[in-house]
Image (cartoon, rainbow, N blue to C red; front, side, top):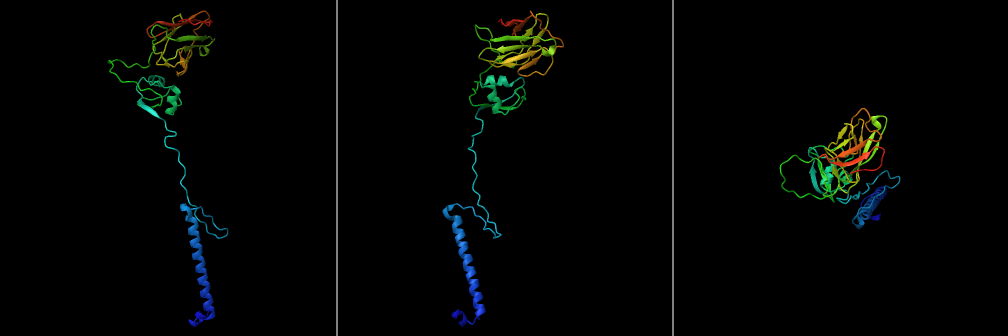
Length: 259
């Protein structure tokens, strides 16, 4: 204070100068402390606003955790481009991969809907067939199982009769361990009615219902398109392969299958 008076300052001016000096010193000290606290340890700490100060301090953002790359990716062994005549089940058979696994790998909900030119991932576990020269011929739409020295394990499981065609159907099952292509096969009632199978692949342990009435075909249900029922008690249902050989027979009303 005495030094300030010697400098020619009045008492009021000296008090004002000391007050300003004190405020500046406090601000500098607080700033240094805040900077030290925020960067101590190398990682900015989340700052909180002082209640009532009216000033909000930004909260430091930390990097968010990300999923391990590939944790949800489909591991594919090959990519297959859908061609005319392909079905999802025949593609699964070709690469020896379960149909449900193939559908899951490609996000497919409807096994009966794939488009020509579509690229499908063959999931891990599938086997890529070896390419070999083949004679020029019409492409096989679905692989057909023809075991040597044994009957094809496809049977007429049951025949459900009804007064109307819409309630009548024949259940055909694959009892074998491999899939069977049914294209060109026929189902006969012995009275001049014959149903011809379209391009259908019957997976192992699978069953397809052949309805007498009308409807939209799917992998599990086929429709004959007739207006009247054809199956009567005592009639014989006969299933033939594409070469006309009898594969299975069943008398309507019985439970025994013939082959």
